[in-house]
Length: 126
Image 1: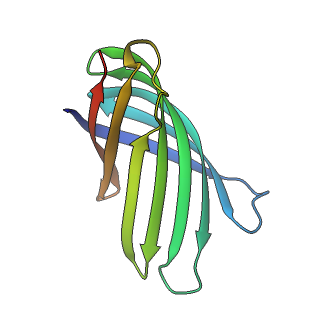
Image 2: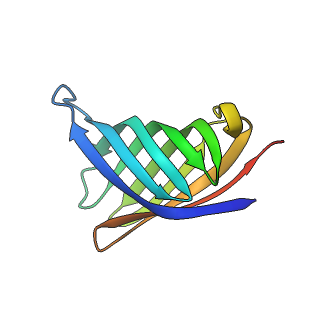
């Protein structure tokens, strides 16, 4: 497994048509060992308890990963139970293109003082 780290900026735009669920467009710019942009969609729903909810998202990343160019899709799923967060971000199987064909992996996202960081553990089949 290889690893890439860096930061990203995200812009989330609510979709006013999403009545029962929160629906948002995602635009990201990645910096660091993964350099590029992504576009995606997120759905969310809140539970009746304080600090409880769920989200799912998919985003297509276009860029360069440690010198290899291509695109791939990330699948997000997260649950917050009374303020305790769990989330997973994984590469969609067989979604890599060009030099990223055969990409597998998962990404950890952390937010510190409002800044987003990623840690991406991955491999690319030869």
